[in-house]
Image 1 (tube, rainbow, N blue to C red):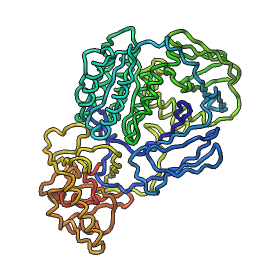
Image 2 (image 1 turned 90 degrees about the vertical axis):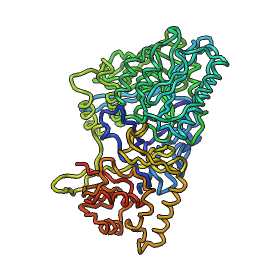
Image 3 (image 1 turned 30 degrees about the horizontal axis):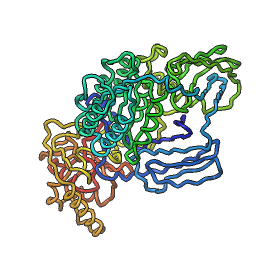
Length: 607
């Protein structure tokens, strides 16, 4: 993949957990919402990076994880997670800086006898325009205040927005809005940047709270509608974690309504939806920044203000002459700010010399640059094939056929993605690398699907799951509806202090009597009223009748199976590696089973 580069610093990010999604607008909610464990799943992760920076490494820092760094020489080093039992509940982000901040022009090619030629071109931007060339702007600040932002995320979003508002130029106009289930606009149209309006905006931002559904599309529509001043460039600053399930519709809406506006996205959190956040910035011809809960917002603010005050090059087009060039990406080249290079990838049919003419606006005035290039016939850089294929798949997945007329074809995007992914050996929405275990488990002649739970994202407040820093909500009526209220389902709220103490008491009793297992399921009647009912799927009945259930656990031991059998649970299937038990039990015993600390979820089997 292409590493993000900005001002001499490279960034490598590796997502480690799927965050929860608001499913109100999702076309396929059952496919994108894995169960979330209320306790440790027992999963751990190890990761090691080998870095060859090509120049002397000045610094390397992990944003969210403790790491061990081993400098092999001036330009090479390895980085490894310091702990072998690291929980995969947040993204791994590494930033490293090299001694030189001068990014050189680079043009790399690879010619495959069967697939043809591929190229990757990186260009440094021209010098910045003067202060007099900077035009006034209309800036819309958009804040996600849905339920998934509760706690640390909404406070981080406030911190970021308040600092950005304070950095506005005297000639700018601005407005502030929040969205969850509804959109809340501060003013009916942008107002001048003066002390009075700044004070009102600060009060509005500081008073925001997080609740309700994550209706990102409605926020996009509101931010782009009714531009008040046609002589100003509208800039939309969109803060969100992106925990939704209707990404394609959001990106299409943004493409259709963006006009001349630019959208800059800020991902707030430790494991956000980078697919959506990056996609919104790409379709919106802006840029994306990420602010973790562990770092100050100052870095992201400074980088954005530097960009916004002095854009280097806008409205860029690229034209190749002398060669038969196809599949140029990106189709729409984003504006250039700071020292961020322009990176263009594509394919060519025949080797030989060619020219590239870049055109755009520098400070509002026309600008062009022509480069002489040679498209090679050698097999020099095989990674370029994968890089191009990855960009092509990303483009088809986010802004393909219905977005850009340039890529319309008779083959639908899904089929194109499958074909490309298989041909170039990359993962995609429809393809993956799979480890196959050669055994088949059928119950009553039917295959069973086990929905394996994921870890809770660090710093996120999950409705229905016990949290020490918030109050517990136990949903008795139906499965948890993340990011919004569960209509018609009564909630029992308990202070986390008493509940967590009781849970810890059971765990300690278990450790003290490991051989005797006196914390048997049958002995926890007194604890039943504290049971987090969100462990039990709303599809299951707790009435006096036998039903088939799946029990997901943090660990599976023979003693637990024995306890289940004492309760009359008939075990049809169990797997210690999947941490699952499937069988039949009377519904009135589900609460007792859920009370056991190692149980993470009880659901109906999926076939």
